[in-house]
Every structure is written in C-alpha cells, then in structure tokens.
Image 1: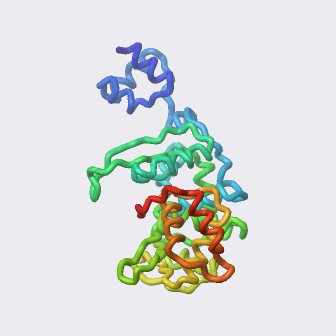
Image 2: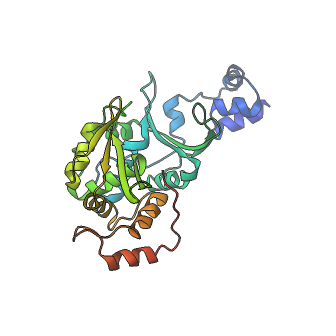
Image 3: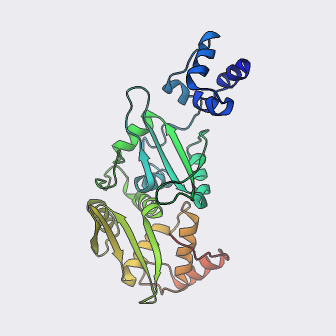
Amino acid sequence: MEEEIIKLYQSGMSMRKIEKLCNRSRDTVSKILKKNNIHIRYQNETSKIYKCDESFFENIDSEIKAYWLGFLMADGFIESKRQNGAQKFGVTLNIKDKEHIVKFNNHLKSTYKIKIYKGSGYNPDGLFAKLLITSQKMVDDLKRHGIVENKTKIAKFPTTIPQQYIKDFIRGYFDGDGSIYFDNQTKKYRISILGTKDFLEGIVKAFDIQNNIYVEKDDIYVLRCNTLKDINTVLYKMYNNSTIFLDRKYNRYLDSLKEMPAYSNNSLSTISRVNLINKNAIIPTGIN
C-alpha cells in the first residue's frame, strides 16, 4: 500500500484524492510520504500540475476573449484569497451545458479537469459540471476587468473592453444571465437580462435601447426588451457575425427569427434570416 500511495502522489495526484482512493486518513498518507523522504507539495506547487494560457485575459483583443469575459461576469466566480497559495476562479454549469465548459477549457489551452458532481440545497438531484483554475495572474486580470469576489450585487460595466468587442462581451453575459422567451399572453418573444443597475445601464447605452430596468429583488435588477425594435437590435448586435455562443440559446434565437419580422436596417433582412434558419435545420425550443 505504501508503494501505491507514493506512486500516486508522484504522478501528481493530491493527498485528498489518495485518501479516498486508498481509504487512508490524510495524516497516514502524509506520514508515509515523509517517512520515504517524498517532498510534500504546497498548494501553489500542486496547481502547476495543470497548465493553461495564463495571459488569456490580459488584453481583451478578440471576440473569443471578450465573450468568455462576459460569460464569467455572469456565471463565473473567484474564490476568496487564502493565506497561502494563488487564488482560484471557475465556472459551474448544469450538466446539459457541459460542452460549453469544454469550449472554454479548450480556448484557454487548459489541461485542468472538468469535474462532475451532484448538486445540493435547492437542487440536490441535479448534476453539474465545474471547472476550477488556480492562477493569481488570471484572477488579477479578471479583477482589473471588473470580475471580483462576490460580484453579484456590485458588478459594474467594464471600461477595459475595446468598442469592437463590446457586443461579444454582452453576448457572453447574456448566455449566462439572459433569456429569450415566448410570452404566452402577448404571443410574442421577449428578452430579459439580470444584473446590477450599473451593469444593465451599460448594456442600454452600448445597444442604444430603451432603459426598461426594474428591480427584481434586493440589489438585483432586470432589463426587459419588449418592443420589436429593441428585441431586433439586441439580437442582431449580439449574434451578427458571431462565432461563439451557448448553443441552446443561439438555437432559441434562430427559432425566434421564424416568428419576428425584421425591423429597419438594424436587423437581419428577411433573406438573411431565411438563409440563417435553413443552415440550422435542427432548432431545439428549450431555453433557460
């Protein structure tokens, strides 16, 4: 058993995993390693087992970087700084969106593992996919762009994103905290986006739409797009010439194109809409 524990640890496995795999306490595992003169890794050393492009968020100079920054602004998190070791950031999604986390991991050129776990609290039977990355450099860059610890009620619209990538940033945020839905009462499609008042005002300004922002609860607000003009404007600006998005929301967008007429020149023409829909024959109707 000692040889197996040593082999597993030297291969990069953490003591926590070895505890569970070998059914031994942390203290026992540690004593075995020390007895055999095996160097015990600190947290920052352990994190170096996995690699990624730590300069990814240094400068937001592409559609891909802007999109993922927006997505993390909505659904990402930064863990509080510990006494020792680098900070971590990550994202957790329902298992149905696991492939989206795979996309993110690939764009980061990351070797970090995506973990699947069972939920708790309000959804104890749900399955979730989680990516957690240790990098003080990346956390510092995210903070510089406005993504901080416990950001839900204090997030502000960033000023570090070049104008040409604002729409991609908003699309990423929308894929985390936005919805395209069919209103059964009015028989029309609607758009809603959750966030802080400051952040939603940034979207209103960027897309030049009506400021229909309302209090949802506590310090959380909702931006509602109800007019045909605003809905077309938001969808067109977010999705026109885009190459990355949450697939099921993009499919919902394509679904909405069949129902909503185009509005002025600031939206897809009827021909463009038909071509876009025909290129995507399978259009699921699920949304969240």
